[in-house]
Image (cartoon, rainbow, N blue to C red; front, side):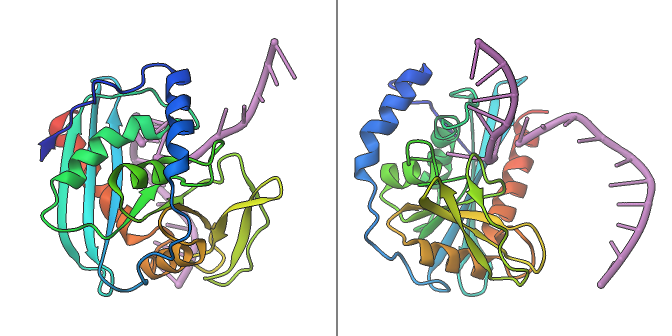
Length: 229
DNA sequence: GCGACAG
DNA sequence: ATCTTGTCGC
């Protein structure tokens, strides 16, 4: 476990945070397909909080994309760097996630985030932000549709429906289990939407959520418990 | 103005 | 995100 330090120039106000998003958005790369599913490394990142004690814990879990075996895992703890504000989640999660990623002994490959990338009010959600800061290919897999709309995908696993912001497809509702509520996939950085969905499906052979996020979620909770309540 | 709103 | 027991079902 390592300790995360909030950057000195981290935004303090919501207005500053939105300005950062507007400035960094241009650096998102959308014309790369990304790594092929089932090859190399895939890394899940997640964060848990104890707002009472002002403690945050992040985890990064590297899986072999073919076997889904754990290759490496790290955790980091720090102080809460921003309140939760819809649309500004990245400012709350990123400092500690970066510390966990930095501690990894191997390349993370594709990074799978809890939340959104392009599917965001300013098209710059957590996954895109993390991708721009690290240069790594990233995708976002969210459990809720946020402010977006979608039609129910067909019943079988693998079915999809567009996730819409008005007329714009900002992501996809992807069913990872027959007849179970879909997950919401969006592009982060350097990965196509088709590829992002293919990765997500490959990472979720048994449960609704990808193994990357399940593993990272369990690990960051454990780390929070050891560092706090 | 009011409500909704990733984690 | 987090607070939280049992319970129904494969």
